[in-house]
Length: 323
Image (tube, rainbow, N blue to C red; front, side, top):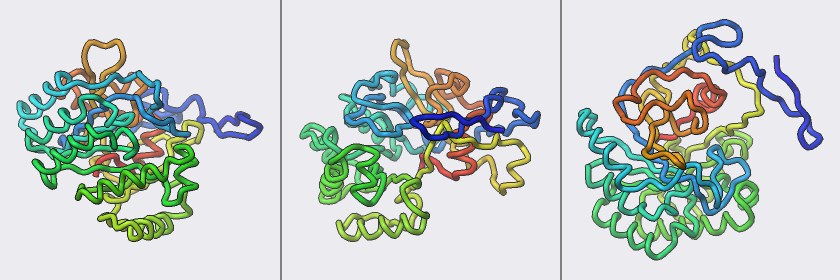
């Protein structure tokens, strides 16, 4: 059963309010699926919720004034790098997300800290004006020189057309992002693209469109590789989705170890809090049940799939924020 609500004179599906209430049992009384931690492949750091733009549908409510996550500092990040070593987790992928990471005044030092420990670095960016500031460019070029092949920038390009991308990010955003991509390409940075599946008729059509754009601009990106061009499903809280039960693993032929909460966590520092906390994943930022503790060792427990995003984005959408 779903409820229908009217927004802007349109009928909109709203999730049954009985769903996603109990972390153990679904609305139908079935055993809810959970994901057990396997190993740490990616540790995400949300560098701050502030962004230079405000997207039409931002999953983490970033904007020029958003401050629910304050800027992470080197002092915030260092204990987690130490704990990776103490727990003997090896060399992993460190991911930076936001907001726009290149607004964080410490971003170059944070990048160096991850790379100096021998980890690889993935930075999610819109490649717009914050990244193009001379101080940031100089720092990026220095990192590129000292740590060749260890840093990848995943640029948000919601669609391969100007119309599609600007519909999400505002008029002129597409051209500014292409300018940033041109600078990154000219300077030999490793690049990936993040797009939105909702803008294209199919995965095949989307990849063909991105491939044409990539060839036109000479970017060293393989559009056929899902890790190089990641097409994310939309996370719409008004769309009804099924709850994931333990039986779903066999029905859908999906192993829980493939979900990102089995191998990643995200560090955030909330406004007004004295120290960072760890969340189960990058998507579930405003739901306290997915706050896993203040240290890595505290955060490694199982995650109940008790949120619509778990179903729509990860299980049914087959998406992961990590490469």
